[in-house]
Image 1 (cartoon, rainbow, N blue to C red):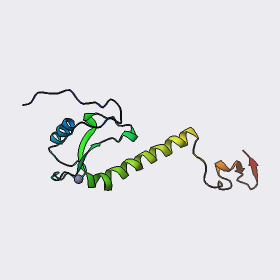
Image 2 (image 1 turned 60 degrees about the horizontal axis):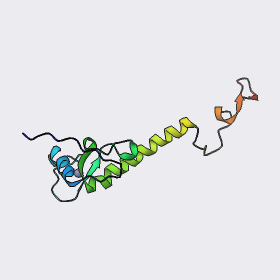
Image 3 (image 1 turned 120 degrees about the vertical axis):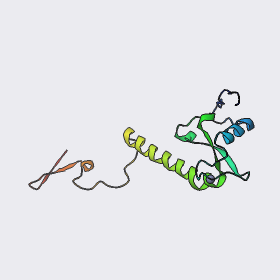
Image 4 (image 1 turned 180 degrees about the vertical axis):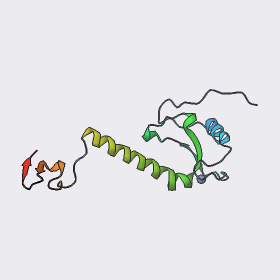
Amino acid sequence: MSRSVPEWIGKTDDTPVPPHVRLRVFDRFKGICGICTVKIRAKRWTCDHRVALCNGGENRESNLWPIHEACDRSVKTPADVALRAANDKVRMRHLGIKKRKRRPMPGSRDSGIKMKIGGGWERR
Ligand SMILES: [Zn+2]
């Protein structure tokens, strides 16, 4: 049984994780990679933010887990970036920021023209 220590919380998002916190994180997960669940042996691992900072995750000990550098490059970072892009897309649509890429299909709601069932059209 070990004494409990207060959770480490980074003062800013840019505050690096200190070595003793890295050790605690490693021990908390028993040295197992959070992505591929394989035991980490080599020195090639990082303290990753489970919820990425760019996706609103916090720079604190409870949001950290150890993962292989290889898993970070091949799985985690691309997934974080994709999630960020998907969220941004929805937010931009809701805020009316996103520009329309192509001409709207004639007769669709975005075209400004209403097609009538019996033929003909009128402005919306
Ligand atoms: Zn891994």
